[in-house]
Length: 244
Image (cartoon, helix red, strand yellow):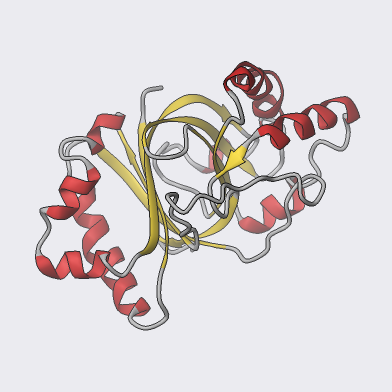
């Protein structure tokens, strides 16, 4: 239950993108995976304008210039514990890399990152598709956010525990869902849904609450109180390791 995650969101320029991706997948990720306690990694490209649950306009994204806005690529590392990414911490680790690697990292635009730990996990009907907790699935939805106010934290916890996570245990196409809380980074909360594919997510997740109007209304109340990171929630397709 104390697994750790290092998640980075960022954009890339058109020029040099292929070179960057070759370096990331062929050099950077393998190097991070050699760090003690690091167990898995995946790189995702966010979908443009994916279908989202709920009424238009109910999601609120922060508009603070201090919060970086990158979100077109998502890099996820999983570890035995959060402190697998603390010795050295991400910024210190990057500062100590060779100049050629730092040049590649400098291509990231609007980078934002969190180190997080697992609060709770639920397994969907497709859990058999992965016996490895750190083998990240081909499709994901990743929300990162803060509660709107301190008094909303209890309701948010109650909603996940009694409604959202139990729903995912029955949702076709869902492999697992992990509710995360932050050790470092802007967002205090994150929710990582993994699906067998983006298509399965789009077909089954968007309208999954329609059978229970009372709970659907509760979801609407909870979601409207949240303040999401720029671009959150992201629906994304795995680009490394390649999907077979």
